[in-house]
Structure formats: C-alpha cells, structure tokens
Image: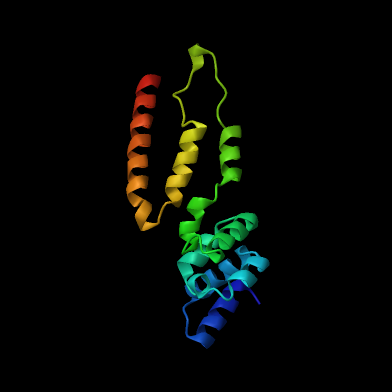
Length: 154
C-alpha cells in the first residue's frame, strides 16, 4: 500500500483529513522512540501538535535533553526549553562553514559571521511570547550589521 493510499484510507476511516494523518506520521518518524515513551504521560507535550512539531525538528539527542528539562520542571514546554539547550551541532557547523579570508583584490562582500549565524539560529528558535521582544531586537541589530557589512563590501 502506498503512503498516499494509506493516508486517504486512514482519513476516510477516522474522519480526519489527510494532512493531519501525514503530520502524525511525520512526527512518529522523526521523534525518537525513547522520547515518545518519555512524553506519553506528559499531556502538556503529547497532546499538543506544536510541541510535537518542535520535537520533530530536533536531533534525537536534543529531543531527549529538552524533554528532560520539561520533565524536571525547569520549563513549561518544549518551545521554552529549547532556550535552555544550546544547539552545538549547528553552531559548530556554522563555524566550520565560515569563509576563509581571501586576498583584498578578490574580497567578496562579507557574509554573516559564525556569531551572527548562531544568533539568527537562536532568534528563529525564540517563538515563545516572552522572548519575541528579544528576537525582534536581535533581528534589528543583525539587519544593521548586514547593511553596514554590505556597504563596506561595495
């Protein structure tokens, strides 16, 4: 049975729409089995699609760390807990991809630094209402840095 016919068949039998079925499948495939077991008795996570979607975007190791923060009572939700756990894998990747200096005659306009990439990553994660003002201020600062960097490169 193909995935399309499975979702259509399941949707017709359950009364849910196909998109809901596909999203549920995606969550199950992306959330680590041990993490699924851990959140089963945590309705504040297991019963909320936004929390499950946030988990599904993370690596299995990060999923476990974030769920442990919520289970320990240090954060009320997955989306809040991500602020407490650094994304070292992305930060390290950003540092490794930072462009090497080139001779002045062929210098391209400067791209964002590793710190700016890391800051943008953090800003993207800050969807928690209490952190929106901080994210907006960070976006303003980064936009100003981008404008000054592009002005210097021309």
